[in-house]
Amino acid sequence: MVKDHYNMTPLMAAAVAGYNLIVEYLISRLECSRIEKIEALELLGATYIDRKRDNIAALEVWQRAMRLRFEDGINIYPKPTNVKPVEAYEYAVEAQSSCMLDELVSDPDEMRMQALLVRERILGPAHPDTSYYIRYRGALYADMGNFDRCISLWI
Image (cartoon, rainbow, N blue to C red; front, top):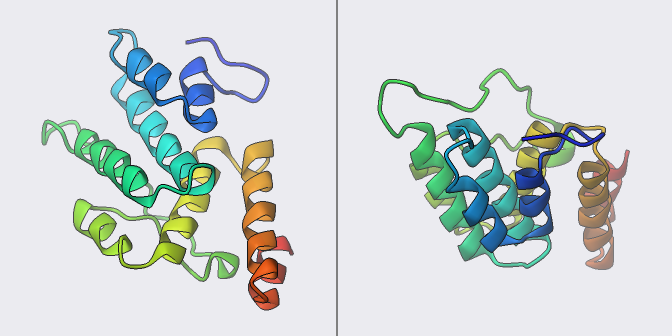
């Protein structure tokens, strides 16, 4: 797929915007690689968290992406493990397995941190959506009176 000046394909753009039907259509096409499908589903999950506030739908698509990562048992696409945890994200690390994803369901704040981590890994730290959702999450913390968390994200 052709990428735009932010290095995003139409599939990624649909996932970031939360257009799940378009995502489903595009990932069903033969020219869509497995890693493109995985990353689109992961971005869609992040969008479900931050835009739609639907943690259950996010968990479902993240689980689906995780199954795709380990689908055939031979050509495995693990998430990067050499990423240094960041204080601003309360040292959260991306879930590496379905079991780790299941553990997130009991902690909505941890799910929100997963969404930020996923977006930063796939889109990159300089992408406008990455910085927007970091600012957005910080503003929500400020609205709740948790100014320390807000400042740690914004700095």
